[in-house]
Length: 124
Image 1 (tube, helix red, strand yellow):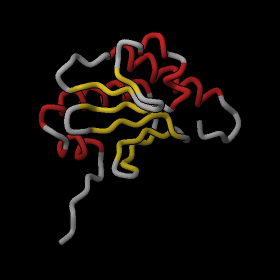
Image 2 (spheres, rainbow, N blue to C red; image 1 turned 180 degrees about the vertical axis):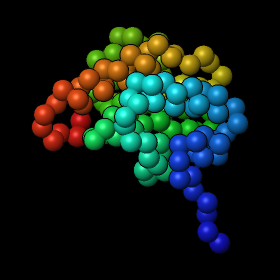
Image 3 (cartoon, helix red, strand yellow; image 1 turned 90 degrees about the vertical axis):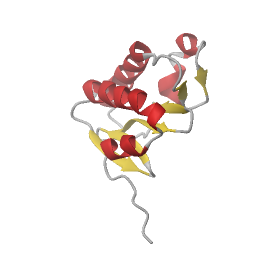
Image 4 (spheres, one colour; image 1 turned 135 degrees about the vertical axis):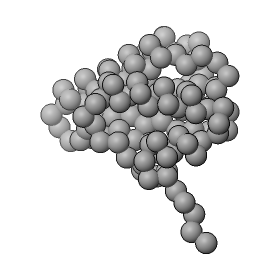
């Protein structure tokens, strides 16, 4: 039996835990507004934004979403992220707390500027 895997970000969000879908829809909208020309794709089962290199990704989990703007993308904002749960590469936002929309937008805008300003082929 074939497993139906989401082919689009909208399908991915519809397949996510119902309690997380509002946060996921909002993150998707924020990222789309910050990088309207980026390619949106599902890679390795995760929503990605690429322009032409990796900009950022986000993913749904049982009780939280993860926003992945790269380790370097988060490092610039470590002080502002201090009150949030983070790992080396991810900002984790539980579904039962308000989404830090302004911070996500700020990080995403920074990441887009960095990628657009770089002239070499570095991934990060």
